[in-house]
Image (tube, rainbow, N blue to C red; front, side, top):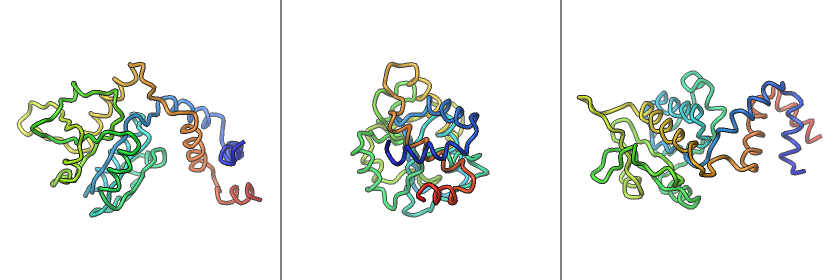
Length: 217
């Protein structure tokens, strides 16, 4: 058995059956088919609210660019979701885009554009990262130039604009709901599930440092 798997089994001794069952229930709906990208979000509560939506709709990974504005975790706004979603931080936009494209993701810029795609017409079959930009400036030119798709949410009001956390919730709810109704293999692989199980076990184990020392023993 791999060392990480052994550690997971060791830590599971200190968790309730209910907690472990909850892990499996949630994991069944987790996906890496879609991910979220946040670029230099100024308001911490907005970034944390987006991560909360990731958790609610089963998106396991959020990629945060903080070359200008640093990300600050808030358990209050995220309602603890920050513990359950894998947040990857980057110092620059190029690194983020290159990393994601190397993993087979298309870059989706969530912003109005002359060549934009309506949410209802979005192709869910392709692995995608939905990028959201700073509150006033929006996405950088670098993201816009690298984007494979420009996605918009149809609106008919006077303002025709939404807070990024609201936009993220609408988009993620729509695309994940459609995804689960298909035959696409959107679920996490067993290896990916094992990695998440270990991460969640560590988060859920009291006196983790003591147990880790005993495990290494």
